[in-house]
Image (cartoon, rainbow, N blue to C red; front, side, top):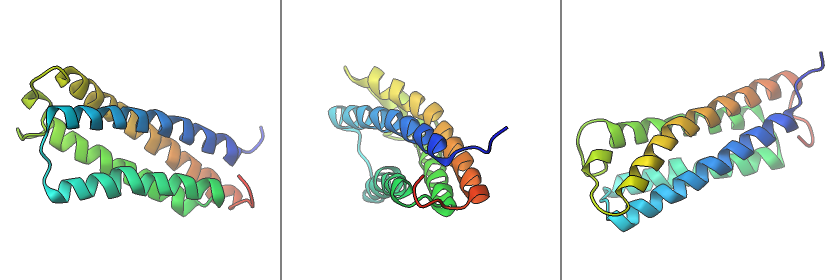
Length: 142
């Protein structure tokens, strides 16, 4: 049996990440149309931890594959998942799925539920990529 190839895992992570960001953008659109309020720190968290950080990590992995960056991507996705789980399904708050009313409420609820599934899958794939990269070392090109 041959050793796992980093490029295969990087492609899997990327494909899952594209699905995750597509769902995330649809969720953001529902947030906007429903005028779901977020505190300033929540908006900063969304942009830094949920959007920019993981996207930068994924781009970095394509440029210079590195186990530490893959672990960082996994950690950012778990942080994103925990944030979404708490605010969408935890204690009642303006961001809770059951607090939404209006035409885009079903989209908000569906995308929040989809993120509960896709984010840990991408995190798991990133962790597997990190393991592969730590075993084979960081190749010059994935």
